[in-house]
Amino acid sequence: MELSADAVVVGGGLGGVAAALALLRAGRSVIMTEEYDWLGGQLTSQAVPPDEHSWVERFGVTASYRALRDGIRDYYRAYYPLTERSRAWRELNPGAGHVSRLCHEPRVAVAVIESMLAPYRGAGRLRVLQPYRPVGAEVDGDRVSAVHLAHRDDGGERVTVCAPYVLDATETGELLPLTGTEYVTGFEAQGDTGEPSAPAAAQPLNMQAVSVCFAMDHVDGDHTIDRPAAYDYWRDYQPPFWGDRLLSWRSPHPRTLELVERSFTPNPDDDPLLVDADQRVNPGDANLWTFRRIAARRNFTDGAYPSDITLVNWPMIDYLDGPVIDVPDAAQHVQAARELSRSVLYWLQTEAPRTDGGTGFPGLRLRGDVTGSADGLAQAPYIRESRRIRALYTVAEQDLSLAVRGDKGAVSYADSVGVGMYRIDLHPSTGGDTYIDVGCSPFEIPLGALLPQRVVNLLPASKNIGTTHITNGAYRLHPVEWNVGEAAGALAAFCLDQATTPHAVRRSAALLEDFQRRLTREGVELRWPQVAGY
Image 1: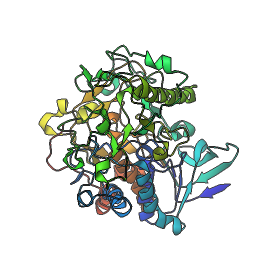
Image 2 (image 1 turned 30 degrees about the vertical axis):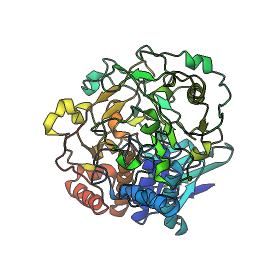
Image 3 (image 1 turned 135 degrees about the horizontal axis):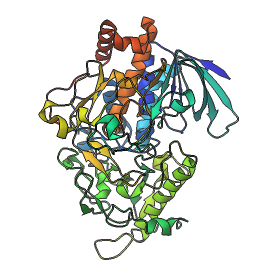
């Protein structure tokens, strides 16, 4: 089967959805593909509650991302048995998690994303191919002419999609090797980037850990899972920089690297409205139960929820034994990461120390119904680091590091197509490196980072833009990925309207100004007000 449209968006994560919406709002037809059962990527199939900056309720995100957040709150108010007090809470945080001002069940985000896309499906301008993954491409010189897709569950069923513009919104930059687009992975050398935190030599297979998240609650009864086959391996596993076994309450503090002990208190009966989820003040991970909690039972009427629901995306599920990009055994590493997460749950249920001197929490119940998977874990691994294009402009640490920039703020780009903010937050890596967690200035997203050096009609729309291993740590989070995808989709639509090219837009002051005006009209913020980083 062959299909065509104005644009093909390969990957239905947050960047892909935002890219598709931008194209559709501009009147264009879109084919979007997604490998997993849910659209939304890190927010849904990977089950990661939003990681956002401290000003998210007022500014610093696009209008369409704000519509997604508002839609999630409206969905709870329309369909969930909230208490009157929580229903009246303007900045409703359904999970009252400490990591974000909007922690929620992933299925709600799926419903809202589907509702945002529904009118365009009905109009016949959006076709979603799901579950499909890219397996090949056709290239004519510096132009991608077609992408070949295979059904995830039946690899023999193939589809070829063609469009003037192809957007790579996959989680790992899958189209870059398939199309021959130049890219990098892992650590760049300090001599190439000038970054204070970079190593002396490039380390292309040294990448941030992936994690397979899962949801659980705590109820009466014994819900202990079968002992995982690799449990003994993971119970005794100790990274050299960790200071204890991986499966323990103790681990390095990401910002100071000193060994700290976290607590774990299921269902603490705290007041959700008193939770202050502000990363400037506190990373929020002192009590792991409330850190990424996605349902706080006191937000709901009595008896509606027998327990809170918490999302496990904790240090102990970071998989360090190998990368999952550009290696022949990537699938085995993904499966091993899933086994690690099962081992963490089993440890929590059977051996984790309790404050009363006992061990194990057998009442912990795996909630695969919340994550939508057959094995109870998230459908997809949480991918923190992708292949990244060799771009016309590469964002380096010294562009946004608070230690380097100080009160000057991040570098301002004439070709800004959006804004973002998060600490430069790198988890331990497959090469044996510990955390890199650097204060960051609120930053802009340069158009040059979205443009491959050579290929003219392929645009990155996720975590695959021109950042480094270091700066990806700040650009990889939910609202920034959405902004990148939205800018990429808007750029493709603009180029189709103007009969021009993305590279020409950046070269021409008039075209660039026109494109930035269009972004501003659509609610994309290009500059920050005067605020300090953290």
